[in-house]
Image (tube, rainbow over all chains, first blue to last red; front, side):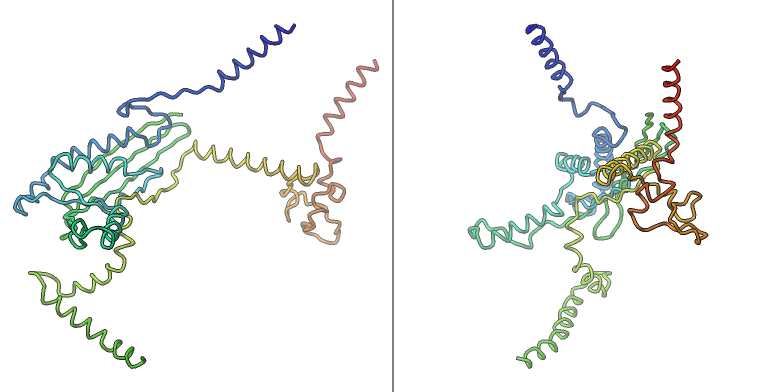
Length: 195
Length: 162
């Protein structure tokens, strides 16, 4: 009787542990895994790839170098406004674009936003704490020639369990001095979701 | 002291005029001579705007989605039932949210003991509305669920006594 009781208890414990177990596996970030149909890493990657391809191979870089005796254009990243129906962080693909600027060596990048504030705060701290020879001076920052801005828009068409979601991501480079838009890139993604 | 303040106030516009004049002299070719108006305007808001550089302002909207709306309806129903359960646990079994029957002008108004009133008035006294002994239509004895129960009991009784 005792053996039977122990066997039953062992089975119960084993069953509970099996039902509670979960599994985590690493996957390739390039692999396409669509679960809910919402914005995911594949969409971000597709946007980044297309934007990098467009921004580095269009004529604005050449035009700038022609007009400025071969100097590389300097870019700062502005807002990318998310006007879609989902929470989307543009930083995932904008950082890829920034990375491509630096890796290509054709475009220079300056820091903006809160990171720039942090830099200035550090500079301010150096004015009283760093040695005179190593202290960085105010007023010698590199001014940007262009600002990268953008928007994310979406259209949702749903009927019962079927849904088509369309995303349009626009990035644009504008000349800060003249307000002239020198480059416009876009990526369109459409998804058919059936629940 | 007051005189110093006064002198400073008088000197301020003068200093601004000199500064603007000095800057105006440094106009580059084709530059708008009134550029300082805009510069002063945007200098005031530059810090707050530039702090958001590199971020994603979220101006999302709510899409019309049948599945999402169905889920929201379910969630609302569950939340309502939960609240009702909590209220019943707190106030006793007789708690029922028969707001439809008690609402003024409804077909089945809660009896409020006022025969002279043509329009049934909702009795604002919580106890009188939800206590079955004070409301005929909310009474547990007027519940039609008793009919099938009584019929079943009668049938079982009849079968047992055969």
